[in-house]
Length: 71
Image 1 (cartoon, rainbow, N blue to C red):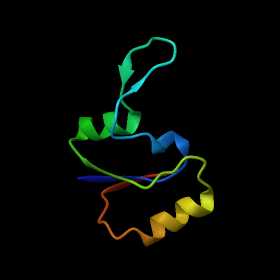
Image 2 (image 1 turned 30 degrees about the horizontal axis):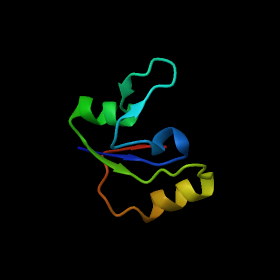
Image 3 (image 1 turned 45 degrees about the vertical axis):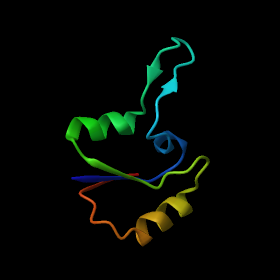
Image 4 (image 1 turned 90 degrees about the vertical axis):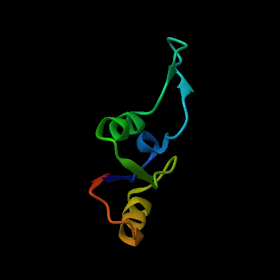
């Protein structure tokens, strides 16, 4: 299964743990958790401060055979 993530900052954080501000615990992004839960490959084209136009452009030019796209 391949899950594609397209969008702005909310989906851009993936692939590495980060420190929670209020608890000082290490956490992974929600999209990493989703992919781990479904044992899926992650295809991520999200960018910080991305626009709707850029998101749709990235989705349109995607050549992967995605099972699910999260926008």
